[in-house]
Image 1: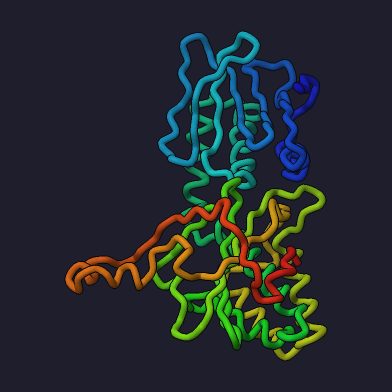
Image 2 (image 1 turned 90 degrees about the vertical axis):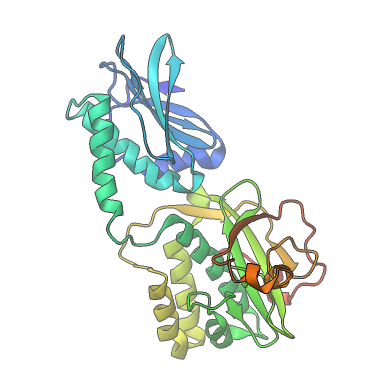
Length: 331
């Protein structure tokens, strides 16, 4: 659906866009009415893009950035440049960038090439500064808070032990170290259950200790979802009520992740599918110390900083995981 009468709003709320994404709907908003060149904000069931009408001999600008794709499309007989991203996890931030490009075209009357180049320069300068919390880390923190919440609510663990067991941000190999087992948490926003593993030790159980892997698939949840800020607030409230002595420990841990309660936070998430809980054993696909140990000492010494992506799509969940890991939901 195209709305030719819609006027451009430089503060177009992400929640408006998320409404369509959450429901798998599509829409096109004319950001400058009937003016030329035509500027459209396009929402598809899984993506957002900015489309700008091209002149008779004009070519789309070149991106030069691997996560920003620019191509040419035909719309109602017009040639238009389409700007989109290859990284679904960055849609929220990419929305702001598209609005900035459109604002330079519609309100400041810049050409497309100039508007795109100026916006990229400004954003590059911004990204070179320390960021509040990167998109992947926000997703990861949401996943770890989900497990922390389940552990805290379990009467056999409780909030005091749950907070004490949370060690993921302290350069430990695993995210949680409980009395009887360890837990590693992975969260993804992709439609496949694919996760990045950092280091050969991340999926290597410690001697005589069970290691459980929790895989969470998140999707943008619209009004029904939870923001990271809401998850943090819910966990803090529980700790304040049931283990107040651990509140400072919790806040220190959150600060170590880069969490800033004053930062903008309007991206809502919900579980895309049921959590997958697996024992980390020989049946799990992984690169661990055991596998690397088959190399000769000389070759092993030359392998460092192992980072790989594992696909857990379709794996059968554990029949009898630890009880707290059977009640996972966003806080």
